[in-house]
Length: 316
Ligand SMILES: [Zn+2]
Image 1 (cartoon, rainbow, N blue to C red):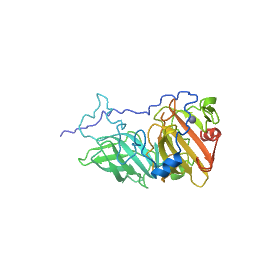
Image 2 (cartoon, helix red, strand yellow):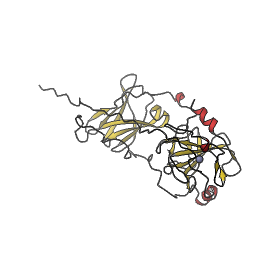
Image 3 (cartoon, helix red, strand yellow):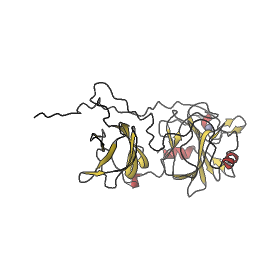
Image 4 (cartoon, helix red, strand yellow):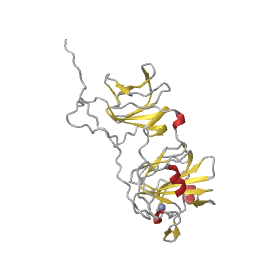
């Protein structure tokens, strides 16, 4: 009798997020609004679909071209067509961070040939536990992390009986590990020098926020629990979002994002929820987040304060 052992030579490629160092950048952008955000919001209800690009990337089943699926090197044992492959695990909701899910979190398994996955298993105290499948596409499967899940490999089985699992064990965190406050830029940053500061001179006005330089594409997240009150475009601010901090009278503003935020106006988001990505849109001269901290209503009676000390405190 012939025993065939297959699938030995798995060549795994660890895909690290591309993180070019954040270039130091002074006085990047003025971020003064070209038009009143309040007026245009009132006219259009929940914000106009103006300007560059739609906020894609987190829609249902969007594995996206960034799913890094075809990065199989030569010489590996993965030439079988249709064989499922998991290259990344991303936490989408109820997360300690994008790589640290909690029980009950929604995670995406990204990879290739995942469109026919029928079952997903997590390690449990005794054996395995099946997860609820939410969406699936060729590049990604989304599941809810079962309450009984413990640290271990996550496995998938497709309709042909093909199976694979994650390259590493996935740690599952308690909900209490979810941070209450998160620094808004999830990559290397620089606060620049005097030109980037609150109150710096600009043509016709003073700078109302702090510029945080980072590579274009770096994820931007909510600092804390908040409601989205504006998500729109302006010739000065580019693609921007205003978040009202629930339970307070304060608001945070994110400007110059690379494309429109996928968030909906009115949506309540938790700390660490992705708001968008660092960009260079509007009146901006280099990839950076223009961040404003307002006491009272944004642009309608409130006033901005210098957010630098607060931002620094989030890095400790
Ligand atoms: Zn600025």
